[in-house]
Image (cartoon, rainbow, N blue to C red; front, side, top):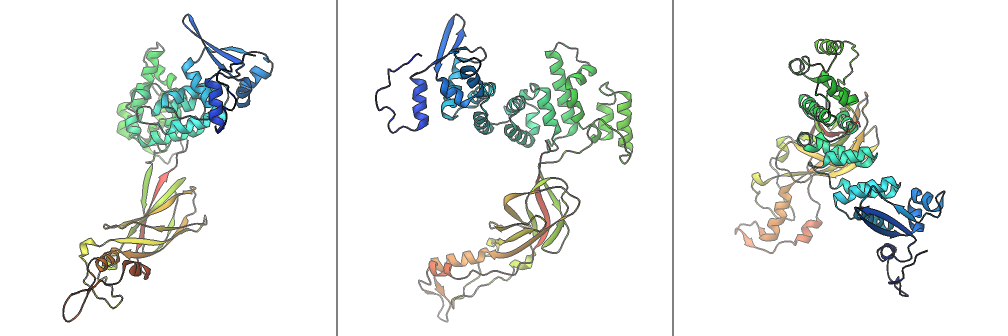
Length: 451
């Protein structure tokens, strides 16, 4: 066993956390017993490691050093650069993955090969923070290829939110057919379907050229594979379908006939190969008529409820006047008035309830935003949402400020300077609430991806 003890003076470990001690073992090559070799043209680069640490993190290294290949102490690496492998080893030894997106990608590729599931999760979480319009397709491609579920989810959510920009990027043309299929499968990939169709055909043409195939309609459909069925051709308008698809050879005569039949009479039970489901925007609002603080809400599909739309009767803000502590004072300018809401929201069928407090709003209708997303499953029976709330007006805040600033009393001799009550005393008094007669007029929610 080769041992390097150049830096191994007695007591070097004192006051060092585990990660720092292991980093020194790796960087100073102390007591190493494994050598990884990299051939760079005529030069051979060596990186040393510790078989016991490697085997403790990876089943592949365990089999390599302590299984059937027991005794193997030199490993040739042909699918990674020395720089990338050094980063990988440092992450393996310490779980520290403070890396840029390119380095994270390289570490993920190596970590997948050696089956370091925990390190893959950490790297995926970090890489998700680097998703941008220009790299979203590349990151989603990586996540699909290595089956990184959480990274797939985060990347798909980003794609949904920026789909129009992402369809224009070079990265979209380079995704795999499996990645394309995942993108198209989402109901929340909200873009004009004709635009989606055209971009997919452009993607197919690019793949044909890469494979030295003629860019015929048949070859385009072949390279699209199952992804073609996720293009929602039946949701196009009659004119869009006729002008852009009917005169091509992407569909057989029978397939095209079925779509025409569906467009002519959607109620017919027709076996279509392409999805007929209209895509949904990520954020949506349903307006509901009503004159009460309880509504029956039919959930169209799986959603995250974000809040309620409210309509405030104007009379609730009219003639608001306070008299308190034997002081009377002038009413502030009405155009400065605002309201805030305090209360409780209950969803009867789920048992969910939460308190809320809205910020001051000077425009109506008001919006009650929930402090957390509420997951609701799509079902035929309605959910019952009840809101109990009080309104607090900004007049009271303005009055408190006026007490603090000028402390005036109202008397026959006119306004007289008076320090007035302290702000602490005023804040200790109950603030006035007014009867709240606001109406629930709608719900705002986020559609959940069906991927």
